[in-house]
Image (cartoon, rainbow, N blue to C red; front, side, top):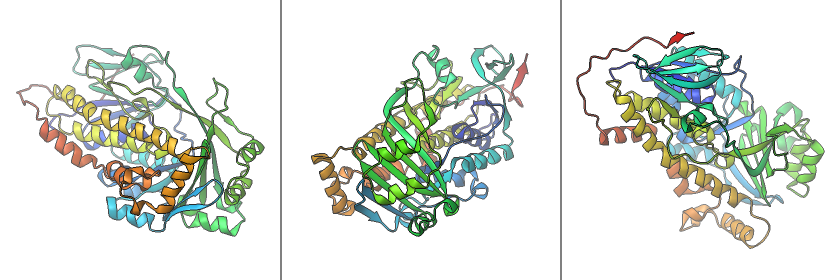
Length: 446
């Protein structure tokens, strides 16, 4: 742990913001979160965390806070007509053996709640109803001020922008208003959560209780089902070409419309859909990759969706945000003087820009592989599945990247602690005498 205690303000109390707050608090810094909403009421459905993220739970001391995660025991992939293409009956065991950490599925509300509790227990202060307008700089002990719409200004040493896809911090960094809003990908997602009590079919109930991960691939579409809350809920996501109006990002969907769109798909999937009583559809959006995630003054850094929005095809949105939070906290534990912050942020950027860009690229490749129309490419894809990943000489050809050894090693095997230790050892700071003194908390002016 470094010798200096920084005052850090995180913008946004979502998963990325809480991850960064936990990481920085564990590094010994004073952390406050400014959240725009008046209450913390996380919404959403299922969220999948792969071993590169769950490995961080031990680092953060999260395990005692976890609430009813599901660990998928098996993994099945079908074509849309219902033919089983590949099956891994030891999926959970292999994940733990290969990476030393599990793949876990959560209800987003439960995951958010456990991170929030851990952050608060570490002394993180959360201020609600604080919408960020801009940053200001002054020659103070704490050089950067966060200007809020309520007229208050909070001073600190560093601002972490974790305010999501529609990030104001991103606009501040780019020094322009949000004139370039998130762009449509051409896909949307139907999202459904089914309580097991709602499912009377014995075969389908058994699937939920056994915590199975199942994927169906079809023309321009795919579907994923996995269990939540200890096998008492089923999370179902169906991805289709986007038909939402241009200015609409989400809305209630028509059940009959959904059933018609998946006409001719696997009868088991169709039976699951009959149990849905309501469904929402969400436009999938993305933003261009940034060339930098730190401002010129080195007082603002972006993480999570504010820096690198991830589409859901490899389930790396929250995972990459957790990596951000862990790595930033670990790097900032090596700050001995306030003048070190600039160099440490540059190291963080160096570690994150390429990896997040590569993950985003792999995610778009996975989308392409899942959505082949019927034809020669789809037939070749299914031949590779039937042959089995373990028999392929070139693993990178395998069209389900979460079963591809090359991709899994690079993606799931990532160890944030190890990579930070290596990076810091290669980038030593010149230690100079300093008379700086840490301060105890963000200072507010009106």
